[in-house]
Image (cartoon, rainbow, N blue to C red):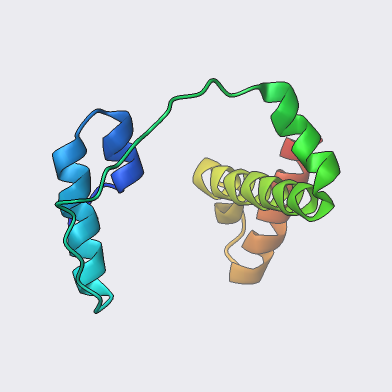
Length: 112
């Protein structure tokens, strides 16, 4: 994780123009197409996000909405399973498979 540099866009939002150019130059070398960033003019215009526009995107792009709901459900199930295993539902039984059954029951009880 420490080997991955910050994205140039992030650096631009923080006002670090020279570092953003250096990272772009490193990225171009990594992909085998080195470019000089001396003459490149990077610009960033901040904008305020409108939450209503973001919600409308789910209507305009139904696949985005489905993927977001699916990822939210996967995240909820993963967190609840993790919680039930940490809580100890899987340790109720000495049988390994029954422990999973109890953990699933614990997850269902947690969700409802």
